[in-house]
Each structure stands twice: as C-alpha cells, then as structure tokens.
Amino acid sequence: MDEQVEEVRRLLEAIERLEQMQDDEACAKAVTQVLETWPDHHARLRELRQQRVLRMKESGMTWQQIGDVLGVHFTRAQQIAKGMRGSKRPKREPTSDG
Image (cartoon, rainbow, N blue to C red):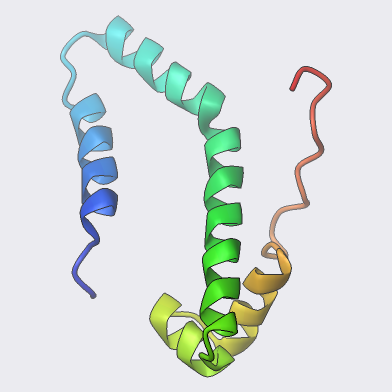
C-alpha cells in the first residue's frame, strides 16, 4: 500500500486517540460530536476531491492517469469528476436546518 499522506495519518491517529480514551462517557460524547458533523465533512471531502480531479484533467492528465493516482478505474475517475457517488448510497438530501 502507498505511504499515507501526513494529513491522512493524523486523521487516523485522532480516531485511535478516541479509542484509547479511558473515560467511557467522555469518549462516547466526543465520538457523538464527530458523528454529528461527519456528513458535512464527508460532503466537503467529496467536493474537494472532485475539484482536484477536474484540475488534474484540465492540466492535461488522462482519465487513466488520474485513475492510477487515485487507485481507481479510469471510469470511476470520470464519475468523480462529474460528482457521481457510488451506487451503494443515495444522494443525501439537504436538511432544512442548514
């Protein structure tokens, strides 16, 4: 497997630190806070990836090259550029509170 990007490593370490918390109540509360905000962060990450894939394509990279960078099939790279999500989950509907 490729070496992890520093930011990915730090994110995973933060999850490990949650797992290592001794206080069950504090851990459960912290995880709840993360999970409450996760859908928004997940959407931001998808949008960020889409923007960067589009920039790679605009810079002259082929779909095959982009797929290779991401570790996905070139058709999946095209889908990401179009903002398409995997078929396992329907697109999340916006909530009325934000």
